Image (tube, rainbow, N blue to C red; front, side, top):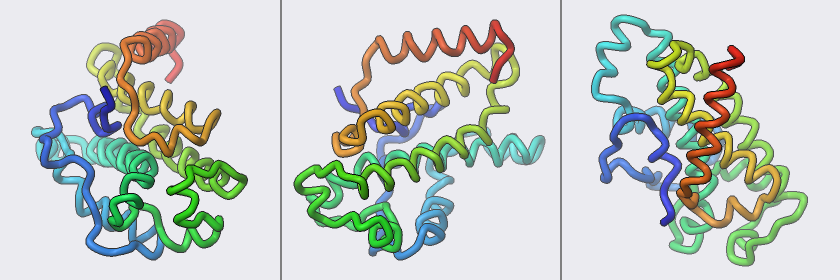
Length: 194
């Protein structure tokens, strides 16, 4: 069964919070991030206010983790949004810069333009995940954050290897993926790597 990458979050996410959609086309990347910033409250954990009051740095890292998954979700749902004639969660300026057209989504074209766009989003998501990595530092308490980051990394790795994965929409949730992510986390925990 397909599932949104937003389900990777280590706390329950209400069903109505899934896949926020902008009302109109987003011109620049700054507009996209402004849109996501307004949506963060729907995805934050229930104890976010207490976390923000006690450790604002951790609250910012949680927001970064959510933002990374929102960016990834926007890329993965671009084809279905285009087919349903909804505004994409990809900035128009970047689509024009990379010469990605609506034909890319209808024909699932994987060319140099699509690869470059996917690579840019993979890099952005990885940067945000790296910034959120200190959430996984406490050995047992951080395990759920490490699992979220590892599962998101698996999807990013799949897109990097085969950009057609980005056209397929939500990811397939397989026990093998969770087992692989858990093995990576165990290795990082035992070796002390983040």
